[in-house]
Length: 153
Image (tube, rainbow, N blue to C red; front, side, top):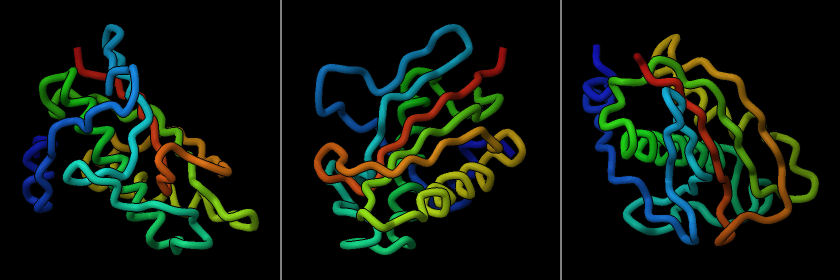
């Protein structure tokens, strides 16, 4: 099944790529590789998840924030690829979790994004990944994520 049809079947409407909050573009294609800028958990133009995971937000809420970041990364990919059906492979995710000082569940938070991508893309959604805990993120976002995608020839 085409990936965009799978999103529709899942009840997901892919919004336009979120507008950058500074001087950068949401995504850039270099040949068949698309690199996204860091995407925040923004929905409807508003930050949906703010605060530190492990303090203001639960691990489960962090997972939901990561999933939303992945969705925004896909919107950024689509903005340069024209269609998600051109995706050959999700290559890599880098996720930054705004973490309380004693929170160590960053890999589990990022599973919210990883499991979503596998659900949408199947084997093409399996990727390399880093999950990093940080002291602060832009706009006090709970999670920020970058994605690297390989497009079909």
